[in-house]
Amino acid sequence: DQLMTPERLGGEGVTGEVQPLSNFFLSSLLLSTVSGEGTQDRTDRVLLTPWLKFLWESYRNILDLLRNNKTFELLYRDVAKRAFEFCLEYKRHSEFRKLCEMFRNHYQSTVRSQASGTKDSYSIDLSNPDSVSCLVQVRFAQMHAAVSLDLWQEAFKAIEEVHNLFQNASKHVIIKPKDWNRYYEKQAQVYWMANNRLFHAAALQRLYVLQREQKKTITPEDLQRLSSLVLLSTLAVPITPVANEYDRFLAKDDIAREKARKLTSLLRLPSKPTRTSLLADLTRFGILQHVPPKLKLLYQYLEVDFNPLELCANVCPILESLPGSEVRVEEDPDLSEPIDINHLDKPYSPPLCQYVEALKEALLLRLVSQVAQIYQTISFTRLQELAPFVTVWELEKVIVRAARNNNLQVRIDHITHSLHFGTDLNLNLKEETPGGPFVQAMPTERIRDQLCAFSQALQQAASLIFSEETQARLEKEKVKARKQYLKTVEDDHKALLNRKKIIENRKEFLENQEKAKRKKYAEEHRTKELKEREAEELRLKKEKEEREKEQLLKERNEMKMKIDLERLENLKKTTVGAKALADVTVDVSTQTHFHSDFGCKYTNPFLF
Image 1 (spheres, rainbow, N blue to C red):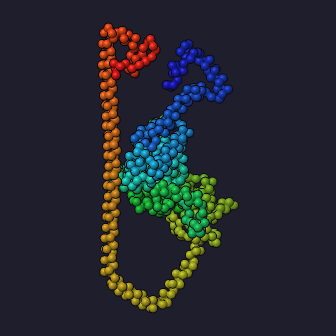
Image 2: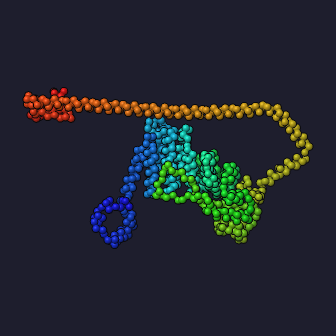
Image 3: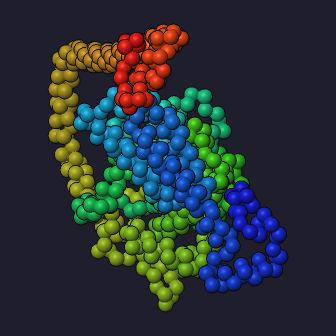
């Protein structure tokens, strides 16, 4: 609107008489019919687009000038923030991608210059906490803008850059807890949009552990909110079959394995998370103690209790009550609202209702697996009565997917509209007991246990037949073991105490060594800053002295010039001087005299 003022538009018909609206409408209609664009589109293309291009080029050139300079790193951060605000306000997706690529190039050039040892005195030092903090803040602002613009690939790249910053930072740089919180929050958000529920739940668990350890004054409401998110995200992870050794040996998908390894390193986990490990961590970290009672019942129904006939009837009311939960719902971000790099600490609070569809899928798979343990054949009508919230097609889709993924062995009979479970006794699916409630193994899973049961029976029979000999042998072994224990108990106890002492001394030595290193680094950094400050003060003092000398010399020359001019004027006042100097002119700037009769120039002898 500010661009569309009469003063800026100019021309006839703007400052003069206003044309009728009918003519304006007819001309606009004809132009839109021919060109396919409206009046506002043409106005934007003629007036607004050059302004936007000029603003974008200004941001880009300023960032290029300020890059890799520790003196202007705060200004660099603020200009980056303004550039992100520009992309958000005008929804410039292509410019935002170019901006992200430019930031990546700036960081890579900084890393290369520091690794090669050719950095200048003004270059950014990645061992400086302030410099690392500025770079991290720019990346978090980039994540926020990318999420607001729905550019999830750029958001993931920003997460990788933050991970590299944390990895390449010096040991003396301490990452702030709020930076770790935002790091895991953005990962959880990106993984959910990528439909990667496993790593979404793992990121939320890492966030929960971090806040429990670092945030001592966490409120019960925040703890309940975060615990509810962790529980529902973990239950929403797809139920995958337990692969046997043969399947693990044949798993040679390097791309998938490399992707999982990369995501695991981004979460700073020692190994790839699984649904089983995440469920075990719920109990290990005490997450179930802080969730609402109804969510605790949801966990009990899905993962503990075995009640297929009432499973859906118990779980569905809880799922329907999730949108009305007391957990806060984060509003959709306003793309026109400017962002602030220093105020991006809003907690990640997605609505709990986003997990309903994933929980329904897990509920259906859990229902089918429990029904397979107690029924050999069941009709589709009876199975649909147990799960009334889905249609026949959705139920059949879940069953087919479960059979394809080897979650269970099932055969669909469309003639009788029934399901047959575990009828192929030649098929052995898994070597381990599946997760979740479990009552008994299916016929296909009991075949592999025959040799084990036969071996156990033979051992029991041998122990009954040779009971006296076995008892005497066991008694002798017990006496021998007791004597050996009493003989070495003192030495073992001393060895354990000595080992404990060595470990404590080693730990204390390492801590003291680390403290000494930090103290030495701080002193070196302080000495370096002091030397730079002294050198800067010396340079300023020298420049000041030179300016004073130049000023004094200038004043002396001006004074000398003034005295010479006064002497010349006095000579002109005399009779002889007036005749001799009648045709002489003086150039004050060069102190050169010109004679009009001869057309030559000479230096006045009276001046020098």
